[in-house]
Image (cartoon, rainbow, N blue to C red):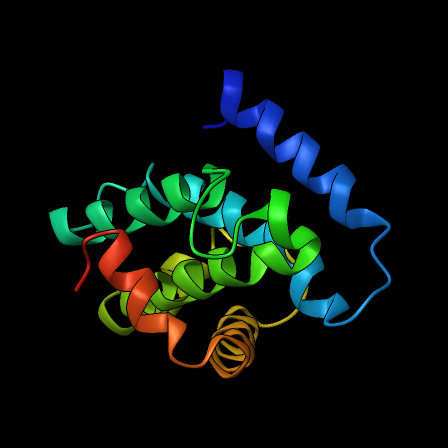
Amino acid sequence: MWGGMQEDYLYILENKVAGYEGEHRELITAAPDILRLLNDLLGYEGLTREHRQHITAAIAYFVSPYDVLSEPVFGYMGYIDDLYLASYTLRRVLDDLPVDVVAGFWKGDGNLRSVVDEVYDTSSRLLGSKVGEILVYVGLE
């Protein structure tokens, strides 16, 4: 389902985080796989309109250079808010759809539900009160 600008962004993201060895490495390096999952899920006909809206918002937030924690300002830590919104969205999707259907789109390492929950828990903890700001920013609250 990837093509054009999205493929370029994913390629850049993969290359940027591949060599990252800093703080919260496992969280940051999961970004390309999570972004790919969101995009690939849009090809699933069983998504509700609400799921599509949330997924589209999460993808748009991911690629936006200026958000609550923008990458140009915060560097690698700027991906944490992107990962929060992505995992928030994926938890909603996983709560509503069979896990095996969603997992069929997962190209990353590890158990999908465990990865999503770990990304959500860690990013939520790191962001603290900013989680509400993120949801308001994209219109989900």
